[in-house]
Amino acid sequence: MLLKKFLLYLLFFFTINSQSQSKFQFLKGINKQVVKFELFNNLIVFPLEVNGVKLSFILDTGVNKTILFNLNKTDSLILKNTKKMFIRGLGAGDPVEAILSKNNNFKINDIFGSSQDIYVVIDDTFKLSSKMGVTINGVIGYDLLKDVVVKINYSSKKLFFYKPEKYKEPRCGSCEKLDLEFYRKKPYIDVKIKIDSTGENIPVKMLIDSGGSDALWLFEGAQKDIKVPKKFFVDILGEGLSGTIYGKRSRVPKLEIGKYVIEEPTVSFLDSASTVNARTFKKRDGSIGGNILRRFKVWIDYPNKKVILKKNGSLKRGFYYNMSGLQVVYNGEELVKEQKKSMKHNGYSRNEDAKPGHIVSFVTSYSYKFKPSYKVNKIVKDSPAHKAGIIEGDIIKKLNGREAHEYTLNEIANLFQTKPNKRIRIVVERGIFKLKYEFRLVQKI
Image 1 (spheres, helix red, strand yellow):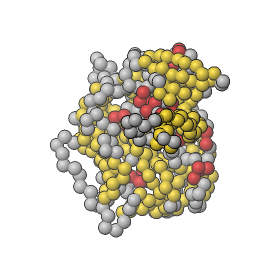
Image 2: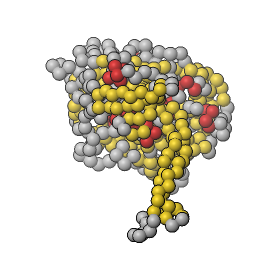
Image 3: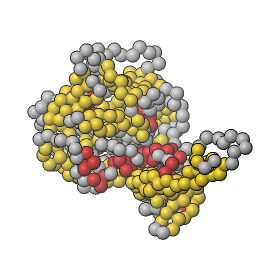
Image 4: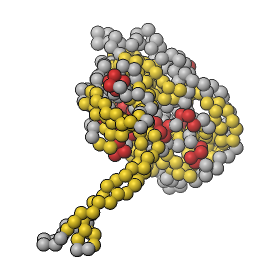
């Protein structure tokens, strides 16, 4: 399964009392900053400097600590006042080793964060960058958002950071303003959901999670009325720090966020082993992720405990999921031989069109370039790809007639959730053999 469904949460089973007064502040005379971001699998990736080193971070409202991954890839980064410890995230695996580093300096354009704590994950088995197909150095949430107001424009892929004292709420009749409730520095809102077409709307308390790419997560049994619909299938929902996250994927008739009504969003019900830490907040019923949030302009105002939503053009678009059963990850780079043709004209080579009457011949030359490689990391049992014969570890060479290296991982993810019954033709490398397979995307819910 592709990391379209990638979700990352960090829930700490220890308490740290920091003596430093960490704070993000705007340069004198600056009240607003605009930062471009990239959108990968519904996740916001933006540039952030740590101790003078430019890195890429996910803006994740679902985390209450700043996390840095792949320390070996950023060994030029100087970390201050370090201390070893263990952290746990979603997934049923063991805690992972980490380093707590204090008194670091952050920078986002003209916004500066002093005395910042960072938790550095030592264990490289998580391999976030390979699962995203783009370099990701870390995640940041509450540590930044507590000191700013941010508007997320998913359509233009821009973040607007405002100085809280100078920020003015948008005036728009079509906007929906909701109160935020915080628990362990994470934001929750009250919404309504209809799980059964014959049932009533159920009030639920949901984490706003910009670091989750699914539409909705629900915790089965959090309330007596929260039950898995009759139509569902078991799927890999993503990867957390503590292992693979499994659950049941389904669809619900309706979600109401204030006056906005969202029809038939997909929903994932997580197994209890993967969510034992997430359920520490007894009032929590689930999460609202990026596949919902990206349908709005979103103003996140932690200082005033508000969130404001304004719909964009994608609000009414349908909800799809990975219908192939393949989880594809980045597999490093491979050397690819590329053919290039040039014209030989009157004893010399040229690329322009030859003039009439001149003798022209074509010379074929080759060049070698490093290109991205992708492999099948996991496969869902009885999925279309599994039934076709594809197995874990297969290296993808072609997809629907195109060389695999011509795709980004994000494009491959989108290909597998375009529409039901779409034909997928795939060539894989397995050992010394190249094998061809074909299957169609099947919508199970």
